[in-house]
Image (cartoon, rainbow, N blue to C red):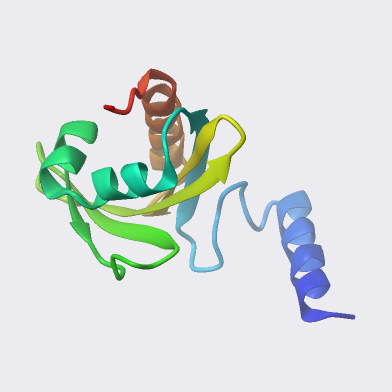
Length: 135
């Protein structure tokens, strides 16, 4: 059996038996993801996400620091909650061409619990729904 399939079977078994919860990674942390297609171009959206000031406006209440190469296919940012000063995981941003603009995928990784994952899942759902890119 190909390792990819073996991993899929293992994860399925772990979820069915309650060993692993939905969104839970092998290290015990949780990941949530939300996406939306928006008007715009990949280049303009990437530039926006790479601009510290523009990103701060897009992510109010969160301090984000680029942790990937600016040329990486998926941009990755360390997140810190401004109110508490505590680390809030890693934000991965994928920006791909879509028929009517760009498909933006937000993936929040390294969440400590299912409760935190539920809170952030709701947050990112509202965020992508309300998001309007300038330009």
